[in-house]
Image 1: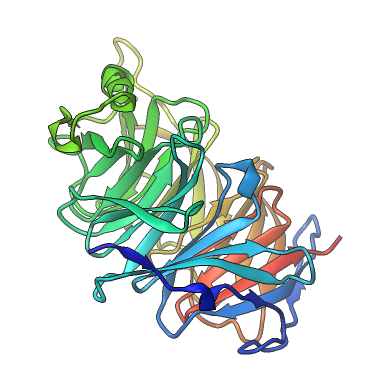
Image 2 (image 1 turned 120 degrees about the horizontal axis):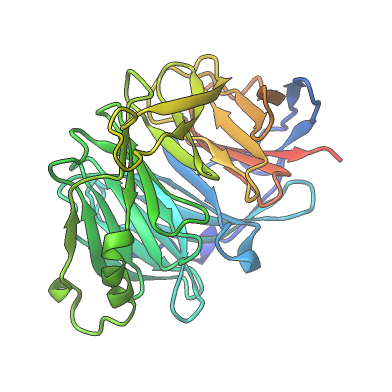
Length: 385
């Protein structure tokens, strides 16, 4: 089974108040440092939940392009500058009607083509060439559903997948090989819900899951396998995939499921179901000292009221200046990520947005905020200049 294009009839532009749209007006309550956003569009993809949405922050040529995922469909849009309009560029439907996509992530092909990785309930990772508008390949390896895909920004042909099968896998989208599997004796003991690459240290990955832990993995000892993947010319199944069984660091910051984690420099942002995002620093084990292994220094917390359900993921803009998250009541909180104490700069709400927001996406400069909801809607908010 593979993805197929939905057809040219899907390539239309959606405008506020247009067909299938309702006039939208935004209301906002500002925090300490006021920033005003307004609703400029509302898209209704269907009645099935949308779980994932993300801007292409990997390739500057397509910085205003975003993708959404839900049921067995992935849709690629472009944000237009006129009045919040959005154009549909591609729509891909998986031939497996039982598939439920949970995650999408942008990547770059060896010819510079924009690629989109998507996966979900059946555990198969689909790679779509958005330059050609066609399905490219599938990665099969996970034994259960994939909860999140993330791309290495320094090497945008590398993607990591977090799975219900208690593992994280590292893939090369160009050669199709599974390079490393992070699982085993020191691995996660339940579903892995989120994974992220360090923004500047190419040798570090963080993951978190239903075992309440956040783990930091090192690629240092296994980098030769990563290098080998770039030039691999045999069939992918013959690649000597390596198991990484022990993380560099294991942290217990939350007392419940940890469903989203992101690096903020050398610090880590993580979220559980306890109505807050926590920023913390891992205190790595020093030579000859064992007492601080697994210890963390909690730096600050970002309160997120009414966010006590799992599988709600936050986002940051390219420069990590703003931190955006939705909650189960359809409200969006915008935090200034790098201030202490935390500064809430906007709280976005709309009378018609009442469904849980599963994920947010933020444009390159933070001027546009998107959120995808359980009721199948996508909301667009734009900064008022």
